[in-house]
Length: 400
Image 1 (cartoon, rainbow, N blue to C red):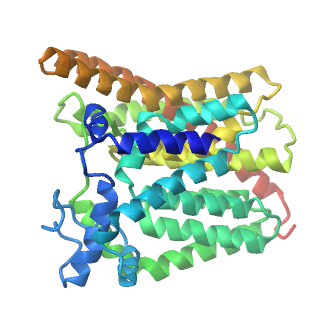
Image 2 (image 1 turned 45 degrees about the horizontal axis):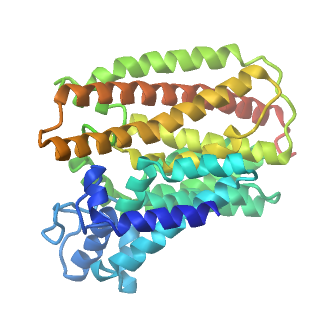
């Protein structure tokens, strides 16, 4: 039901191109713009052009900044002509993946998932159809493999994690999932498999990494996401100043995790541990993306992995309180900025006046506070769980 309601509302949005303009998310009649950029690279290769330099085939002259592995899809005949059916398929995959990962069991959980899927952050993901949607689905299948008992299944999951890292770089944080393997022999085998994929992929990675370093996006104002945005939003000419707040955040998270290192760890069922693993994967993705650099709030699609863990109701009052805090901060981050953008644009249209810059800056301040608080909470819990996993791995026999 959640999937059907989401699909229906998203369809209405795509049937109303001016909605995207009012929400500040894109131009009318130009959906799936990030997917279009990828398909441009396929067409450029077919025409004998270098896809890793700015292309006149793209309205924004964007170069290809990912691995050459993507370009192999162009050999299947895919190109700009396929934009609509491929974009629709990706958007449908996002909805199906979110429902399958979250697995809402009650009306309350279904409503919570719907609140996330209908948020401006997820609508932006649907509108742009960024390749991150492919990564979400690949890693989700990898996490499903980790729910299985045999190492063969987990090896398949590790293979999918490594392929995701080759395709978009930032999923390299999935290396942390290896800490949750059953013993040190499995850990070393999994690490070897992961590194083998990266070594084999290196010739195809190098051109994309070079292009990404030269043409990295620097989004500002509404819908921007990432620690470097903090300085650019307020037009400060020392972008590295964000390292100060980042250091304070890291110190707080480390001290909080250190205080919890000797607290007793309750025994968890296989299902509860799987939820914990998926939470750690989602938290690692979001924290890594936040500090890696600036992008857009559609990166919050990876928050779907947080949901099953957030919906648990632990007996410990403090643990339950942290879950509530993270959930409310997540709602604030995915909704507030988009609602304000819609309000600004509607007011400007009705009053015939431009957006008040001071009010826009207040919006950005509130969004930054909510986002940094959300990332701080995720970082704290990420360190707590990784510490537990590392200690447990070292305590087990090498081949148990």
